[in-house]
Image (cartoon, rainbow, N blue to C red):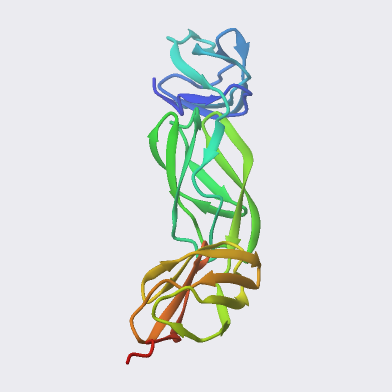
Length: 247
């Protein structure tokens, strides 16, 4: 006599179907000592809603012919999330985040706002998920659903791809050291600025301004790439290194 599912929330409310023979006219389904609500009944199945409980309990079905053999049912507590590896990313989604906590082994879904992702369970204390695309830039709640229930508590921030509008000045010596102001849109979460692939020290002034000091470079025009948690924007030939005079 199978039972499906064989686990559910400690708070109760799980729809459980018990299959077998001679189950018609079931008068009672018990989870341990607690009666469950019967919602459907045929000669080969009984569907009920589990009551609240803890640990492992025996489930039995009573009909006019007697009481069945017991089947185990496992109560699972609600998940607890302790950390989210990344709290922001591109609005297009596609990046992988790691969620750690407890009670995650039965995770069946992760939601970023109203958008769902399928979790990959690593262990009871860890799972990963590929972030779905967001509907717009901004913050959404993150929830994890397991057999024990749903737990919220984290916030994830969708970030649009940055746009660089100006670089000033647009040239400087090959020795580097030029103070450059980059203006644009979506620069708040800037993670790196490179000149011809070389990382430059930078400081985020605002969502529209980043201050940078050019690294040493080779004479000529080079690409400037600004990378944020929302993606990257490349200004082709955005800065020109000028060789110093020689005598």
